[in-house]
Image (cartoon, rainbow, N blue to C red):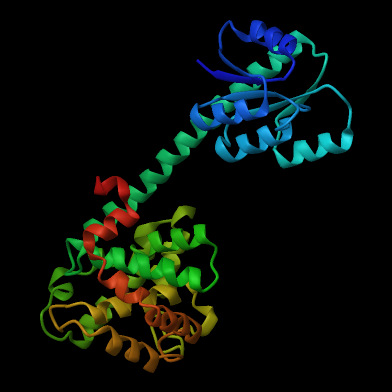
Length: 342
Ligand SMILES: [Fe+2]
């Protein structure tokens, strides 16, 4: 059952509205703004009908508080006088669903409330569906990564760290937070194309022959093919294709350079190489962070975008890079995939 909060300093109005909605709704009432704010702080409310002009805390202030405290609750303003300026300000600032002039038409008000609550329920169902869809996409990414890890020596902690370095660097490069988060998730797919590289090459303990290198290098574009045409994986395709390109054009598969390489791929390249250098691999020990950072600086403008290296250096100086490196798998999973950490 939906809960309505009715706020008015006139006891007759309050009683009339309570009578009008007591059937079919859980009705709460407040005869002043402070009492309404207390209710909003303590109970979930689905819709508020609030008088505009009240002594003390005004209707505008109550609805603004509701916007902050319970942003999904529908806000209806009951107004007994026609001060257009203050009405417009109230509608704009408190994002009011509708204003109703006193005296109101009971049938019309009851219809307005029912329609507003239908919209509220629909939005909640859409939010739930979107949340489910997003977690399904994220699970699909993780499943693909886990499948690829089975073929490679990389551990999942490597992928989580690359994700965190990528997201942090993207934000440092001015990418909006939501896009940076998505880029971080997509970075985990950078080597998904290794699924198509035969094990005898992927897991070969010694150096690869020239012919084997040719096969190994196909993993960039193999990743693009595996990800298919879905728009959701657009950034991941850029990353797969571009994470072995070099800033000076000496990389593969296409030898493109500079800003022709997508920003996402330039960022993941730094993140991936830094993590490979600072962690133990079958063919090398873990390098100290200082040595890895010096190597990244040495390859500035050759392998790496110099602007990204500058941001990386700043993160190194603030201790952020070491914090990510020391995070450990459990903390990384908790940070990026809280549902899996439970
Ligand atoms: Fe790769």
